[in-house]
Image 1 (tube, helix red, strand yellow):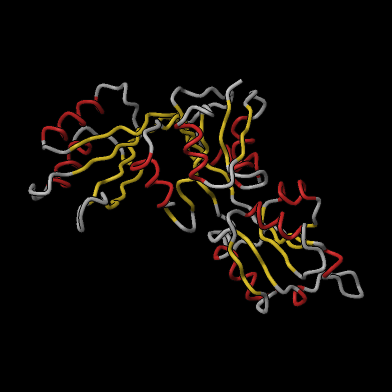
Image 2 (cartoon, rainbow, N blue to C red):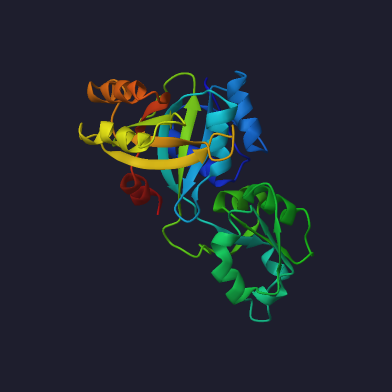
Length: 295
């Protein structure tokens, strides 16, 4: 049975891979830190890793993108989108008033992942502005801490899966500031992954590094895609970490690497003395398909 490395039980990453894998028999192996997730697959302990790379609200997850580019060399094998639904979780009986309603003003501290807390600022400011905010390694860890500290007045922002796992109460559901809070994940591994879901299409992810003494190179790089009518779904500049002002471009093309046009475009870009690295050519699963079934 293939093994998939993923962040702790009850995180959005955990929910997301359960959705994508469905009833396909994979073994999930949970790790506390994203670095451990990456390393487990790099070292062959697991076959795949689940990596969140982009969020509707916060944009690119730069740390994870840097790991994919600079720290490991593991191909992308699939990508999909999953809703990041966060809830306020705790021991409900600690915060109930005489009528049995939750009195959020009794909360002394709210804990969660440092990305999740800013996504829930409107709720926090409206209902629990007095609460101290504390960042921990994951939403799942926050829920576990709250479980182990009853009577403290603490609450966590996390998933319904984490609340169920730790047998805590969801005191307020869907507390994110925006309803369209989705996270994009990639599955990385040495071999193609098999799922029963039907993908919408194929993407290819590239890293293009320009020569430092070639004015107008980016324009010519984009022209190589444009005149072949190859659609780009994403382009982002990131530092190469070699010297100040040196950047590479992360580019996603809505085309398989096995087509005729994309390899020709890459050859033209390399003729411009640019370095091209293929991060993967993989199936993608659509927003509409996932949102219809999950919501």
